[in-house]
Image (tube, rainbow, N blue to C red; front, top):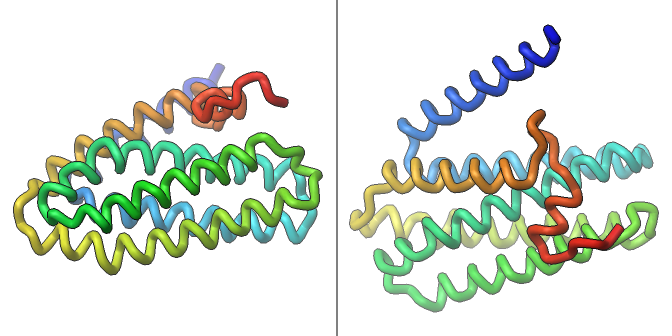
Length: 194
């Protein structure tokens, strides 16, 4: 009972910190924070894979996949339409959408695989490399263009994006905040697979 109460209070404190953080950061800062967090998760995955910790690497792979699904969905729904309006750079935004689709395809492949399959680690590694390339383009090209346009309320957009991402993560996780693989697969349209 005490542990359950402790977990709930920790979760509430984390939510309050996230909301406070959102209020003082704009959408670009929040997206960059997501990028850094996922980069760290890919590093954790590599360590676990080298240790041949199948259970650990599957848990972090699921977390990576859930974070990327929530991030890309929220980005496409909230940030990209506004960025398109602010920059009028359809080519850049179209390319970013295609990159998101390709990442989702890799995520679907990872979620459909047996973690003991020799290709599992390769797929996660390629996803990491792909995301690193995508992040670099966003951070060096798209984000500066959006910020320079001065046409958007980036703080307000940060609040909206953060709320949307929280809803998406809630759909993918249990009450303790752990990713539920079945819910992740269902979100990807892979329901019914292992």
